[in-house]
Structures are given as C-alpha cells and as structure tokens.
Image (tube, rainbow, N blue to C red; front, side, top):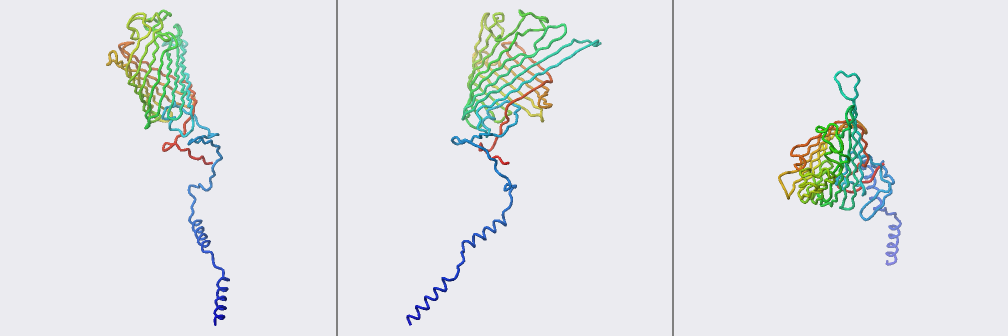
Length: 368
C-alpha cells in the first residue's frame, strides 16, 4: 500500500510540473502597455520636436551658453531692471544711439523775403553697464552740439551739452537698489546772448566749457520696477558749481558769492525721475525730471530741470524728434528758462534686446 501511495504521489508531481505555467507579470505589463499606447495623445506635437544641440558650460548654479542665439537690436537704454531680469548669463550691457538732425531753407526772388540757412544738430547717447551678482555699475555718456548758419548772420549755436554719469548699485530686492555715484554737466563752446549782441565777439561770451560746470555726488536709493520708469532719491547729495573762466567769475553769476570765486559748494537732496510713455508703435515720449534743494541756504528754492522728447520713428534710421526743456535755477536766473526744438534726421541704435523670463531666471531649453 505504501509503495502504491508513493508511486501515485510521484506521478501527480510529474504531471503538475510538466505543465507550462503562464508568466502573470508579463501578461499584466503587456496589458498596461497596450492601454498606454491606446490612450497616449500628442501634446502640442512635442513628440515630433527634437532638442537642438546647444553647448553649455556650467559654473556653480549658473548655465552659460557657449554659442548663444542671435539677439535683436535694443532701441532704449539699459536699466537695472533690464540687467537683473535677463536669463542671459551676461555681465556687460552696451547701448548706443547716434542721431543727426538737420533743417535747411533757401530763397530766390522770394517776395515774402527770407535768408538762406542750414542747421545741424548731432547727438550721441551711450550706456556701458556692468553686472555681477547683486552689484552693478551704470556709465552713461550724452553729448550734443548744433548750429545754424544764415546769410548775413554769424553762425549761431542751437545745442551744446556734455552730460556724464556713473552710478554704482546693489540689489536689495523688490526692484530697490542702493545708489551712489556722480553726474557731471557742462558744454563744449562759448555761449552768447544773441538778443543783446546780434554779432558777438569772444568777449561777449556768457558761458563756455567749465563755466559753468556742475558736479553732483550723492548717496541714496533707486527704484526701477520696469524698463519705462526709474526713480533715484538721494537725501545726501553734494553739488559743486565750477566757473573756471576769470571773465565770468562775477558775484551773482551761477550763484557765485564774490568776484573771482571759481567754485561754489552746496549740500542738499536730489531726486531724479525718468518715465517713458509708449504712445503707440514707433512713437514714445521720454520724460526726465531732476530736483535739487540746498540744505544750507534757501531750502525752499528747489532747482528744477525737466526735459521731454517725443520720438516718432518712420523706419530703422529716420526719426522725427520734438524736444522741450524747462529749467528753473534761482542761482542762474530768477525766472523760468525754456527751449524747444523740432527736427527730422537720421538715428542709428546699437545694442542688445534682453530675453527675459518674468516668472523665474531659469533658462528654458531651445526647441528646433
């Protein structure tokens, strides 16, 4: 009986192990794959796109493109907001604007009368900015000179300025920056009062290079929430007025307190605001306002300098510019000074348009 039971037991085991048992895990995987293939959809056709082969260099937590894509031209100066909101691992930011505005009139047997004349105004505006980490340095150069020549009259100056500035800043967060630096302003050539001296000589000059010259040194804070608005507030600001021409060193001129004085020093507060309005495509209005109040003398006499420039761009090179300048400086004249110009000319800009990611500073992959 035991032998019979053993034979039956061995036979049943042979029958059971000789059967092919299905691989349940493979069956489950195949069913899941079939369902995924059926349900899978093409999202934004991304399965047909391929990533381009871009060589990158990783330095710490920064990714730098070795061969970065071509960027388009920028048509406005670089601001701290521009520098700190670019996804480019870039340190130097350069902007340049060159313009030549001219007007001309000629007459021949014209009954109403008139004199032949030609006028030219040349201007340059350069930005050389540098950024590293939370530190940045702004350097700006603005130069302008213009004249008009009419038959029967001497050549007369219509524009003349030198404006240089350098500003160091440190990002505090939320578009606020520590701001410290200098601004220098003067002119190239001698200036004359043509209403008093229609045909002036050099002895009739009322101004010249460094007579006057203005230097502002200050410390404060700046706010720059976007490319179109910037506010600089300096509660500590020194203003130095230079008159280096002995002929013009007279008491009362440019705030001089005595004859022969070559420099006047003031300590006060300065506010500088820039606001750009994009009226429509290729038409912008640039407003600049500068305020200064002297702590040491006549605090209520605020020096005001306002300028507005309406730029109407016909194409990349031809632009119509209307400018208006207003100055009130009691040390110069106890009255309001105004100047207005209109001209059509050639303008050439160079620089880079900065590619930004407003939500973060993460570099997104480029897709072919």
